[in-house]
Length: 519
Image (cartoon, rainbow, N blue to C red):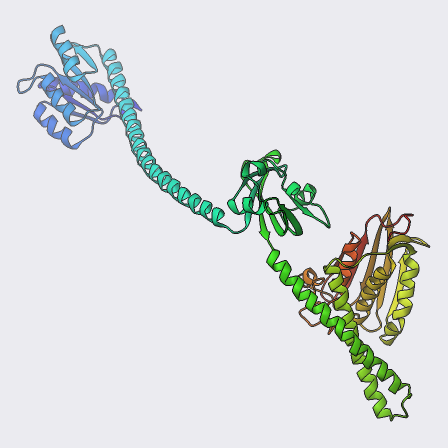
């Protein structure tokens, strides 16, 4: 590595430069340049970078110390060796102090010692260059880091200002929001609340903080359980109320609860945000609407019953003979009136459930026998389309504790829908299963099926089933079925795929027992 270095030899005696050049050549040094005039050497050094300069001390035009001083100005990293014929310690010290020569060698020199010093000098040059290169890289990196630090500081300041502005806006929104907003910890204790929430509860803030939200908000149907929230990221709760202690009033509310996600939270550090909306006005509007519908449908029943009674008189020929054409017309009128009466009755039933005016009359009955009765009742309709109905049950008798008439309504509705929406010459399977004390009831058809979106809205009020216009029904049958099953603390749902049929299921929890009749 050292033999690749570039060496310059300066001595006013040509014999010396030639001797040194030959010696270095024999040692394998190929880049050796000799000069007998220091000024000529300086011209060379201005254009060429070298690794070592060997100079005589006494020269007529410029002494060695002055020459090496000028050379060092041109090339700071170069190593230097000063040769002299005189044992002048003072000059040696001066040379070391002023120009930092690597070695001061007296003439005549020992060749072996000279070669060793030359190699060491070249090594020093190489190390200096590497060190200076590292220093330059470090300075560049340091400058880059300083620039980055300045840029980062500016960005941090800018981002801090943006966050501060955002927090101020968010605080303003929360403070001015008409809905109550509360922050909950993992135990659903209130840790913060906005002004609207304080007004809603009608208490001082210090009395609300650290209180469980569901000690202040309650439902007359089903109280909230923390396990409900652990299964989902968010919940929307209807039919809840809170007591405003300031005005001593019960306020109907809707509560939306969502998990506040953070990157470093643990299970014990979960937090939630709840938005509480006062729905007093909406509830009053719904009540007035439902009361109007209930009154209207109730008043419609009398003329419809009168019309049906009159048509029965005519069709029974109690008022005289009628022609076949007249009979067909009156039959069509009777069918339309019966459909209208069915719609009126369904609306009344829906109103009763939504208004909480329906009371279940639970008795112990055999649901297998009830299902067979519903099947016989709907059998003529099934035979019309050549549809076969099969009932499967894992028990010979299966007694449940429920409202028999209401469950009959649900079973009839599910089987009737399956018949209407099945292909001709197909099958309908009715599976009744007991799972400990729970009942599971399935109605499976081979109909046109439903999409996932349609399944999600199927049990809503006035839902027609699908975007394909599955039927021309009122859309109240499945909605009423849902109301009935949920009144029994059960659940009803559907599993369906397009062109592969549907499976409607309702489940009644803890319904299979020997309880007495409950009124």
